[in-house]
Image (cartoon, rainbow, N blue to C red):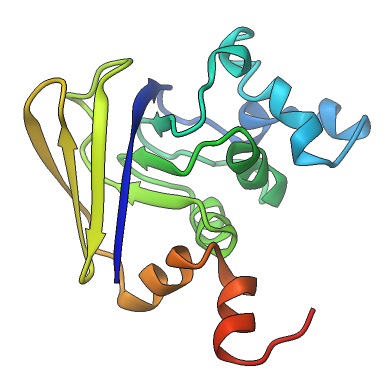
Amino acid sequence: MRIHLEGRARLVGDDINTDYIIASSRKKESLDPDVLKVYLLEAVDPAFAGSVQPGDLIVAGKNFGCGSAMEIAVTVLLAAGIKAVLARSFARTFYRNAVNNGLIPVECDTAGVQEGDRLSIVLQDGSVLIDDVTRRNSIEGQPLPEIMLDILSVGGLVPYFRLHHNFHA
């Protein structure tokens, strides 16, 4: 299985919790990710959501997605057109929610990546390779099990079960 993504790096820091990704107060208005995406990361940068372009890649430090286990944090990122998050480390529940919903979590050293860098990510045979095209630098990500690549390649766990196990929702 091979997955290839290219996009612009959008930097955030360490300990970006799920309430930073989408504020709990916003969920009182709606649970529709297409409505909520305009508030994406507003606690970090109020102008962030308006500057996101489809294909952008979140690049974070350590402990991305900490806090509550809100699945909506993942689906709002996807609704904004973000297909992957690169981070030094992830909160466990966010990581699982990401895989289950088809958002690619890439654990790697993000220290050398700068805002706006053009990144190319290739996930194949369990390996993860990130090329920072702008800086002409390669970064190796933590390997992913083949089953995770299979799940991610079809867009998440529910599509995977529908495709492979006659799962009907």
